[in-house]
Image 1: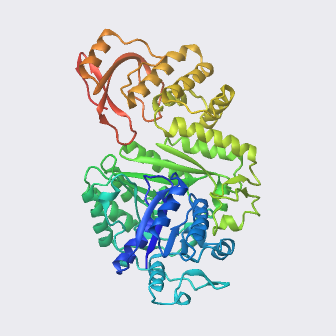
Image 2: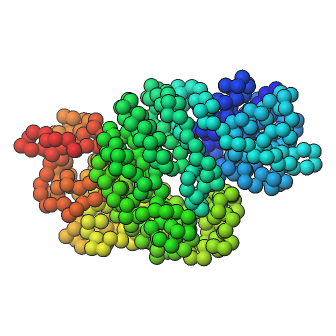
Length: 569
């Protein structure tokens, strides 16, 4: 009896926590199971051929927003090619409408609903002749002409789960996910985690032993998938303290947190971390009070702003803030304010997402009430609501493209910092909207551009927006940004020719360092922020390509003072 688990990831760098967890638990219990990982970028025929050649008796797919259409195509073809093989599905994309999915996909034998480890093992046992399907909790399955749904499975004790990843060496270049808890105490209407209100935790000794495996292997990044990591202060503090005390100088840990419930002791601990040890994702979603209330959130936006400002000041962690377009009561104007409120916090990344109407969520059940029209295919993204029409959605997508290109890339932090210091009114949304209009007017929006071309387009736009007296400062800020990332070989069109001294320095240091003389001092700026416009002052700056800032991605810089290199910043 051959059983095959299949994961189809969005990108090669990702790994599928669910399938690894099922595999690890089954193997712990002595069950032989094979696993294959692919991506949605693979040729579907190659995946089909690979599964076909392995000739499994049962195949199980993990289904998510990004792969469900892909899986549906594969299951149809596989059923025709291997009619004696049973197909099982699991995951959020099929758990909440399991009966309907089986009705529309007759090739599928059954669906595993909810936590899958014990259920998957019992299904495997059934194929080895142990136990009947009607005795297995947590499944919806086909019994001759009928579709049956068994009672749900009780939640597991998380300490009964083995370590998820069997061989970290085989996952050297992959992003690894980890959970120290399941469930969520909150009930945000757009989120599936609100369905499972039974928040439970792994014991701290178990968490510590598993984290040490990552640390010993010097895994580059571990992303915690706990829905609100800091929901329990003692649990969060203990883990943060452990990774600080056992820091290997390499591994980065990513956490999704609620910033406004952080305690003073948590803030102090985070501020004391090694540069690059942790990064935080903060889901704000909106700052409009009526929207916050309607999506069943309790959040103090002022506290979020104060916490973000304080943590950013520590300069030791990357901060991501999230917004969602298409929430109830949020129209184009109030969304602009939400955008500007978060942008004023100057996070390292500002993620502008569009509402996904997920099966099983409160938002899904009340979509008609809110006038939400959304794509009927995954990822079920919003098209319009009672408060925002599709024209405005399109405009916001264009703003998102500019934001991703120029802000979230981190490659334009100096020149945009100058731009935002020039603005008398804080309206960065208006800036990105104007920039998107410029892209459209020039026919650039649908084209792919090199990094240098993006600089040139941005500067052409800024030359039109600002008076001529400011042009030299803006051009130099853009040049400063270019060298903050790379010791570029070809000088851009907007840069002056190198002096003999600069050429000599470049020849002596090669790719390791670059020296440039600027007429403005950009050293007082922070990432995307200047308290005042840069002073007009001749400054020789060395860019050190062997010394990179782990938070911003920029190289560190030094001022040359009387032919002596200064302090690296």
